[in-house]
Length: 272
Image (cartoon, rainbow, N blue to C red; front, side, top):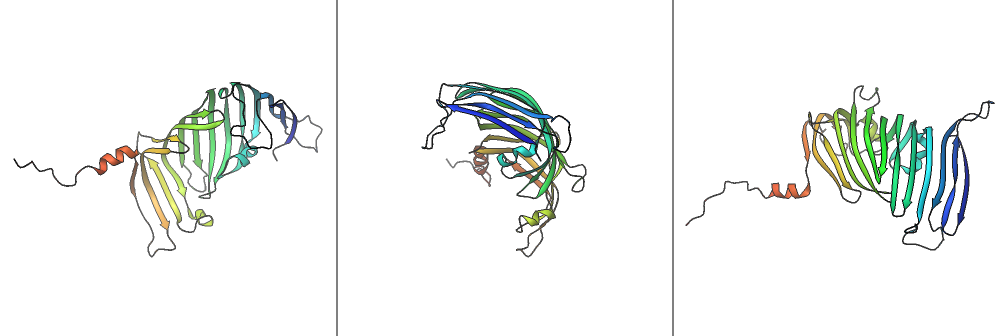
């Protein structure tokens, strides 16, 4: 259970305001409820008419939101994070959002503690801990640790840091570096969601180097190398099992095209 959600909303002249409070505690006790989240929406210039609009937000109008959370259960974010099942953890955060749309300024800092998530496409569970800050139109990830649960791979983990840039409220650009000495990304549990291939697959980044995740949502980019430490994959619709080890390198498209143009035979001198 996330807790008790109390809201108060007002809307007039294409401006939305109100409050959102999330209180924890049990109805079975006389203890005062713990305040998990307190968000004061002072002004959001939005057009809530039923008729279609190219942009619901009113350009040049003020945004003003102030909020704090204290060990707010991450489960409340579940409906807004596609492809991820949130099974545990909490978030502590203080933030301000103000400015005139679309020039919206974000400020604040927070952390995620004892997160437990499941990636739906692989059916793999991970622990999650992270610290981050908000500045201008940017989310800076000071450090995030994604770990395998001990029953899958006791020391499996990956660390990440970098920034996510926003255009208004929409994530626009990514610049994130990832490093791991070993992380389980597939297992026999994957068969429950994908029967085309499954089995243990443990990957790592090269020693002293990172894997870069960047670009945009429309044109994402991976750059770097992934080392396959262990692979014992099953392909039920093939005659053979897949057991591989090696190195996979991600490069930018233009760099790949240049590599493709390298001649595979020696260049002969021109005949005069």
